[in-house]
Length: 544
Picture 1 (cartoon, rainbow, N blue to C red):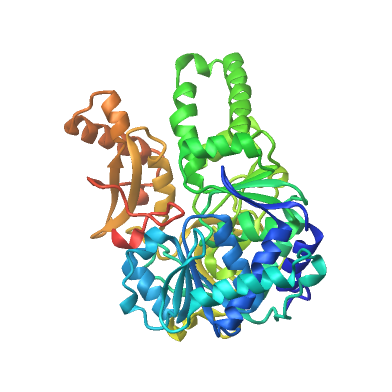
Picture 2 (cartoon, one colour):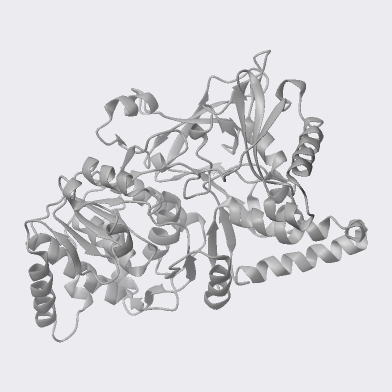
């Protein structure tokens, strides 16, 4: 257990940065740390009057916003358990999560709440709007009266202004449950990951020591807050450091570019897909032209492209942190070559999420960073010669287990407390981790060789004709499911038959780079885009 307390850290940040800007909705409302502190105290009084106890569940679901963040902070500092729900879930899934978690109070976007039948909710007492905190539904408690009465009381109590000395959170142990995170994942039905205050503290503590932000730095938040990656490093860590976080209400390329230019963030968190699209759609077409291969021209182009990329992200960042999915090797190699300041981290919800990371200036190419100091690791079932095996971790930020699912917990956490990650890795003598692929995704060649579909998928993804692909075992045959890039095909007036021929040629080309046992034998063209998680990973289990 860490000595540093999570709730005390949040309280200290509010007091230490009292007058500084804290949250902003892009092109919307702005809040100082003082404003956020007063909101949290108001929420705490509402929770008490409504009969919500420490340990009760409070859920939040909606687009990223200051109100989402305030709801989260009010919950964890009160000692209740936060249940962040991804807005990508269906209304049936949301209903199941609210019931399974035994949620009492729900903060929701109005549009999402409209699709939920409150009659099917077994434990929910009330739902409040994330837009203005008005009551959307209540069953027994009179929340409207409680909210109105509390707001009046707070206004009268602090008639001369809310001061630092007025802020005093109850003591909450790091050993207490902080949140239940239902991850959509790529391996099957969602499980509720139970994270302690200690897990959140370990992630924040590591980030403050290694990610370089200081009080007053600016960030643009566009990764989903209900996902651990965005929550920990685009919200909790910057908040605990005294940064100014700007939330994007929706995610479009135009809005991201505009926000980057105006806010000029000091750190950018991104999933690989965003960076890969920039490379394949904007940079690679230029690099593929004949004149671009001339050494002098190539050097000039690299400098121009580096400048363009830096400007695209506000030209003020310390680093771009890429995570939540595998990064395309070709894109990574190019960015390294031109000197772009990026790094790749690795984590999982069950660790809240961080497992490994390295600052950009010491980052080892093609790795997933170095094991963080709050964890110990070992690699089991190593393959002779390669050192590949399953990564197991143990330490401060590992989850308690899956909520109300002892069987699933025992499948991943052994009796000695080791979390079996399910990832095949190579770990060197300096604890630098290279991810080979998921154990469950790994295919076996005819001679028992390990085939990592992610490696083949990355190669296929380098070709213009392929927008997305998935490599699976189809009755013992390595098969690629391919979704063509119809926009690219349209520009070249390709018919369906030509598209098929082009994909066949592409597979022949990548087969020349693959060992005999892992060559793609067959392919199937799919007509609809792959179903994905919020971090843009294909829901593999639906196609395997």
